[in-house]
Image (cartoon, rainbow, N blue to C red; front, side, top):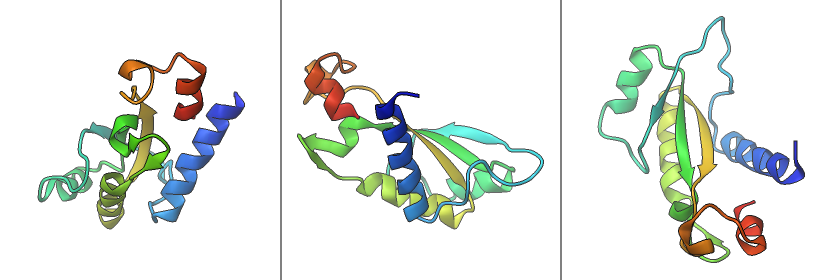
Length: 120
């Protein structure tokens, strides 16, 4: 595993631990998850419904351009709200840091040294 990838994994893990998410992978003999596309608070009742159906974790894109609007300044408010709502419903999360940011490399996947350094 490359050092930048390990650093990112540790950062996302620390974020999940600090926000009180249940452990991942969920404990037990089986695990069922689903992909969602919410930022901030999901529609009323959505997470409760998922929890009642047996879903134990969600996978969600953690989009770079949603958290960095000014170079070097990050705002995780929308993801913090979602993470809190997940924890209230005993759901775990796998956040996938992905996609480009218009602040770097024209919004494409990072390909310059500056873009790659900013991504990790």
